Image (cartoon, rainbow, N blue to C red; front, side, top):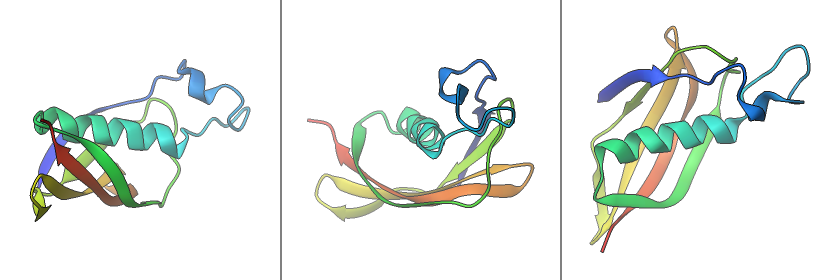
Length: 105
């Protein structure tokens, strides 16, 4: 597993406006976008093909530093691989799932 501990959503991020006023929660799609960006940073010869599954288990608030862990790529077929991931805050899992990557031409 690989880990990067630098994913953080600022309290001024526009996604938080109106998303539970007075108790802003980071939307799942923003968490997922950050996770995928980190995975692709380590796998530059791939692009996201699809999200196979994802579960959001705990809410995330702004300014909470998130650890992202992901498995080594598992080849599905020529040019396609899948990666399992989880994200956590202070050891508590926020999200987990699998994505499919496609090799760039």
